[in-house]
Image (cartoon, rainbow, N blue to C red; front, side, top):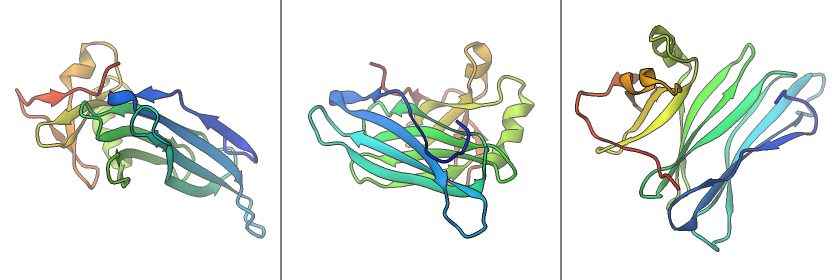
Length: 181
């Protein structure tokens, strides 16, 4: 979606264990700053931790930058144990953003990890221009790979540290895939 006044879009519902659901909502509007000519974007994650549980909305990120910049976000899914919701928010333009979000369902906290500097590693493997969450390592670290349907996506996998640096996944390291419905 382009950043504009009154812009709104929601992701499709992602389902997790025990009937949990998650939706990513994105809205945009004039930032109401005097003579700023900027557009405010807001990303909110709405999670119901179990079937029939009340959904809770958590602000992930807001950004104030140029009108018309491309805004996008997607939920990759729930961790296999249902304790985390993982996904990405991305913005184009002069002040581009590419963040991995890691939301803790039980404590309600979110970690935002900046992947913008790591895009060069992704481009170097010539598979895709976008990341996908492959799952979580045995040590609880998020594992990403190129968002590619062919074998290339499986060949290149990295763990992501808190600063957004990518580290090649060690050979034979087990990865728990995201929850599959």
